[in-house]
Image 1 (cartoon, rainbow, N blue to C red):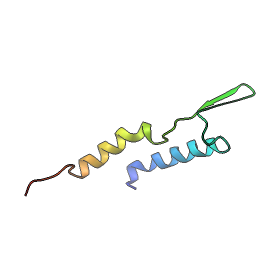
Image 2 (cartoon, helix red, strand yellow; image 1 turned 90 degrees about the horizontal axis):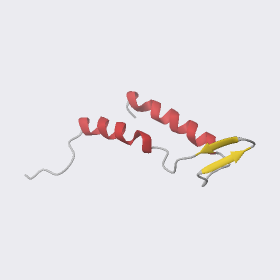
Image 3 (tube, one colour; image 1 turned 180 degrees about the vertical axis):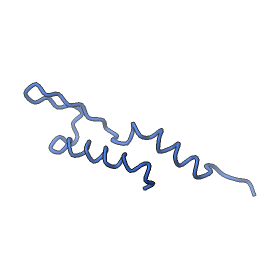
Length: 64
């Protein structure tokens, strides 16, 4: 994992830790505390990941 993208791993670990015991749920309400979970933990980072790797690798096919 490139160093400049390692923050994503930490943030996704926190998201998944907060989901413990609530796997499969999209929302949870406990004594006035409401939490909403995303189905894809990486969705908010997709743009950053694509930008990083598209600048490092050429995507697509080349005709030889």
